[in-house]
Amino acid sequence: MKFLFVSYDGLINDIAWHVSKEGHDVKYFIKNREAKDIADGFVPKTDDWKKEVDWADVIVFDDVLGHGKLAQGLRKKGKLVIGGTEYTDRLEDDRTFGQEELKKFGVNIIPYEEFQSFDDAIAYVRQNPARYVIKPSGEAQNIKRLLFVGEQEDGQDVIQVLESYKRAWSKKIKVFQLQKRVSGVEIAVGAFFNGEEFILPININFEHKKLFPGNIGPSTGEMGTSMYWSGENKIFNATLKKMEPRLKEEGYMGYMDINCIVNANGIYPLEFTARFGYPTISIQQEGILMPISEFFHGLAAKTLKNFKTKNGFQVGVRIVVPPYPFNDQQTFKNNSKDAVIFFHKPNREGVHIVDVKEVNQEWLVAGN
View 1: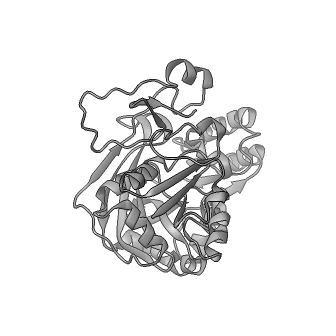
View 2: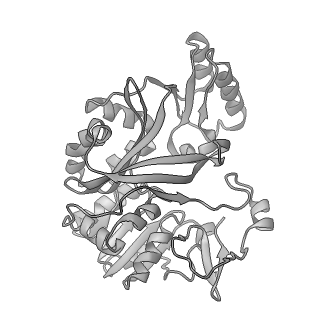
View 3: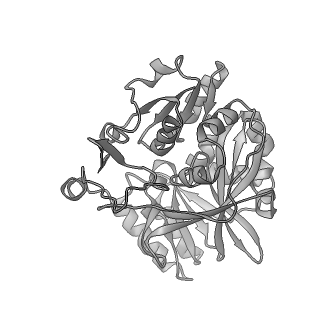
């Protein structure tokens, strides 16, 4: 089969590589110029994915932020496409919309307020002192260190951070939420959707978001994840399952995840991930007991109704280089760009690629 992978920033590299290793033809497009060398030497590239649409048997979009509209348009033309829709993109990109959709379908949500002004948010906290979580919306939510979890009951730490963001981040953060902080365990439930229904098993996962062990250091997108596969359960039926009719209307193809706070009082959804998670999809690939190429084709063709997985927990750990999780181009160029990745043992089983390229059989750090 022929697979076309479309990416803004080079997220789906590892899966494209595995599909290629399974003997299929692959073409990979990365839009971001600074990320274009990612996966060089691992998979063939294209500079114009639209010219490859007729060539491809299966097309995979790896993100939101407009990918859904593209995927939806190609599906209407009869192509087999894994990717979202305008609606499902908005579930993730617009936090408030996502929360209101959950409420519409009978899912309990945590009280929140949306703001476009830092001054208004500061005034709100002063009038309603409590512990809050600051959550940027839109593209700013991808800068994970901007999410701030308040600790003080009077909200003074949240006010201080809002004042700092007003000075330093007002051009980047256009819309944000203040969400009441609820104590409990953060658990995510996810499942693959084949255009008509969620297919079993579902995935229960726990992300480690701080840079260092022990929940220490700055927030990152994800430093690692532990997960297991399950049949339908309480957390799934209380959240994702209620969205199934709406996702069927959309013809959504792909993975959908909701992370939640769970405590003795109930299950409280926080936000959607309306796409693959990274490195979540690579960890899942290790546990799915069929080639990932066949899995993707069956998902896009609506022929995959269930699948088998390994038992027990799966764990993935992200290996990073400076200045992660911060963006300092000079530090990256001086310390990490094109650095050789050494392996003490030749066996690379269980090793997955992210911002990596291969040159003369050597693995190098790539991207930006």
